[in-house]
Length: 295
Image 1 (tube, rainbow, N blue to C red):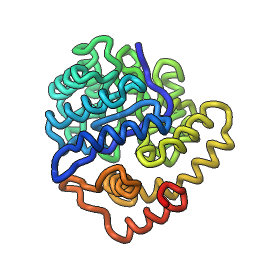
Image 2: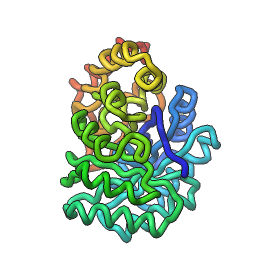
Image 3: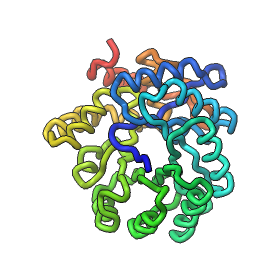
């Protein structure tokens, strides 16, 4: 079954006057592929999927697949806090041409660890042979997918990878202890710890910062995976100020402002998110200049 490794991006979604901007999305996809991004992730947290309608999410996934044109895989965000709704979202992602689905742990209703396993088992049963990437981000969901539970996911063949966004490298090692490094591909969901995450057994990242600096993120991941840890550490440190500024306000407010600064599309976000504060925007622009991303 297909799995996914390397430098991946959680794509921001462009809006223009309140509507999904397909033309700008195609430009972002092309920018990513040319910058070396290896997997595209539409309709995740960074993509503001929770404020998009089902029709808009379908349009974004379809546009991403068409713009990628087979150059890289597309793994579509399709999770919700309802198992039944998630089954339908995965079906739509498949119909739109996605190569896999990113499934966040159900949020707000706080399932037990056993409930988490059964959630993923139900999705896999409804979509046999279709690759699923589990996504653990307890800071947003209110539930934590624990290492013992990850071992349970290994019994579900369709769950090929885990996006682990706690930023805790010790957690990564705990998961490797339970699952090894071959059965379940571990992907960092935390830009601040990509190099140590890969050193601890990870095989890639689903990055926010890669929206803005895809080539640098690809070089970091290649260095960490390819035996050049010194270069990976150098880039991890170099990008650390950018990571801080891209999370100084709720994601994706800052990254959409940065994409505006590099002239890919406007900074428009949907309520309840609001535009970036002027002082933070000024600091982010200075950092983009330091990195040579803007002139």
